[in-house]
Image (cartoon, rainbow, N blue to C red; front, side, top):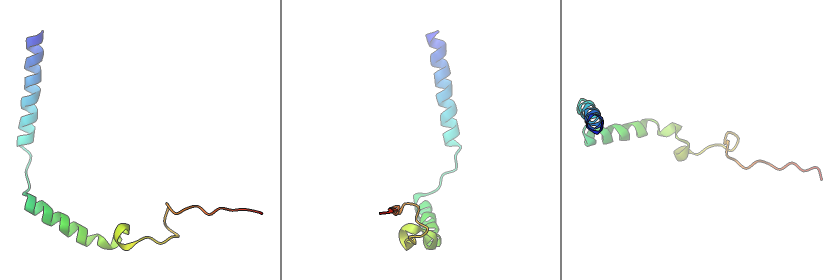
Length: 68
């Protein structure tokens, strides 16, 4: 029982390693350049860079309504 479960576990490991070996890799320098280009292209829509108007901000403090 232990030998067959060990064999099955090793087959799963080999299958996973074959899968990972078949993945196409991208150089870090290319990935960094692509990320930089993406950030520059989308900078105008980024509320962390451009700010957000108070009327469209869903996290603004709610106004307190009092009738006193």
